Length: 169
Image (cartoon, rainbow, N blue to C red):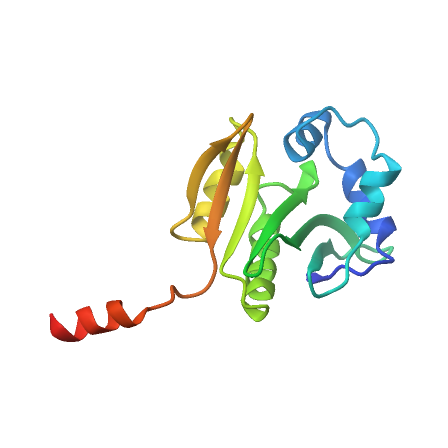
């Protein structure tokens, strides 16, 4: 189950972070991260539901729902946002990331955003494949030590010239 992540979701963030191996943390945060520093934690939980939105994926347990993944969008421009995703190691390759991406895609469409950008380290091919599958037309370019994947959201806009060309042909 995927639900919106609220500002008081520190326990979910801590649980998901604890479920990431050192390698998964490195791929997600682009640096060794044995613990989540306070300023980073606060930034990840700074959600307003408008320009900074997040979702948590949970699985049912006898003790109640257990968070196994998080996804966030942070507006970077009038129609763009940065995308970030993390799934605990034990739940990777089980569709959790795809469910989170579907929720993030819907949230971006609701806000009228036309592109999402994800910074991915080289060699993180799984995330690249997942983003390309969820967002057909995704493009990639280098930016320093990372690859920026630009994921189109929604249907492409058709300009007057495109419409006229389609009618004439």
